[in-house]
Image (spheres, rainbow, N blue to C red):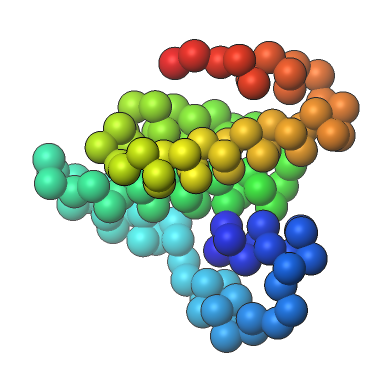
Length: 117
């Protein structure tokens, strides 16, 4: 979902109705609720899906600061075991949100470029 939305913003998406229809039919909140009940030390899926969904929410609505802060918290706390390549991609998504904030003149956006967790 996040990649489709990013491609749409950059005008790279020609037409991908099938994937979009599938994603739009998913109830991610329900999936997250189910996965949260299955939390155990081997469940790496829940934080990753929650992170990506939070990124998607703030990417679709620039004013959704709460979802961004949730994604940022999950990134630094729960996704340390991801490969360096995946972490770099996901960090770029976090920074792209902040670039969008700067481009829209949202106060405080600049300081996020220098955050340390």
